[in-house]
Amino acid sequence: MVLSPYFKKSKIPFHLFRYLTNITKKKLQKFTNMGVYYINNDQKKILLFGYPAAVTEVASLLEKHEIAFNILLPIDEEHEQAITEQSQDPSIPSILEHYRNTIIRSFESITTPFDIIIDVSIEDTDDRIAVLDLLLSSPGDPLLLVSTLTTTATELAGYLHNSNQKIIGFNGTPFLLTNQKVMEIAPSIQSEPEALTMAKEFFESLSYSVEVVQDRVGLVTPRVLATLINEAAFAVMENVASAEDIDNAMKLGVNYPYGLLEWADMIGIDVVIAILQSLSVEYEQERYRTCVYLKQLVRAGRVGKSVGQGFFTYPTTQNENIL
Image 1 (cartoon, rainbow, N blue to C red):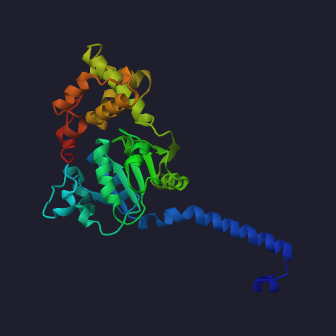
Image 2: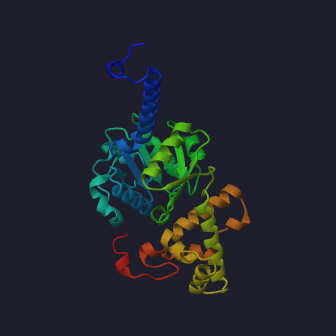
Image 3: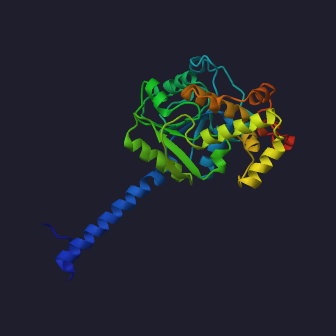
């Protein structure tokens, strides 16, 4: 064994020197393993796309934690056109105006691979797959973090032609993203263990407490909350009580931080319906049948606080930068 110069000059017994050296190595290795993801987080390339309200909330979290990112603007139904028609200049929704400098307007603008792709869509699975497949056609093997409000990570992974070993579902519910300290994540059946570790570290770097749950449509909180909102909407439609009375009963009676219908307005009634309809398709159970009144509100354009009106009416000054 070759002794270090320090050991030769010291009077420390060899067995003690070896013990201290091993302890130091272990501590250094532990520190390195714990810190490597966080130290390099700002160097990772992150792409974000999907439902605008959710995109804005995730972007605000990344910005708060000084993590660089890009936003892919919504594209039309003919996804391939976004690749070939550079002349298109899609308008930026005002809700994303603050992040103008981070926006990517077409797939041709993507010149280097991303390390993490975050999909907060609530669209049909086919539409999401079309976008993800195009993103994955470029070199690289990114971690895919997909909102599973309306599908499962396993289903998305089953359709993707690449990277289906690194796809993790998460709770991408608007409003909850920035008003809840817990993040539910769910690995797809096909996911590698390393992908789950990466996802946990990423969300922890955004100051979330992470809970790993089963990969199911709506996960836990969105599923339960959407069901409760649906029942409250039935109560309003059937004139059991007013929206105000129902919310006051829930806040005062069971100590909810918000009333159920207030929650619906903040999340977006259209999002609540999307969750319910996906649960209905998945489980084929009567309890997920969407209340007609919820559908009527969306048909009237009253999707919630983002537009100034849902179950309740909100001052327009709070919403002028939303749409």
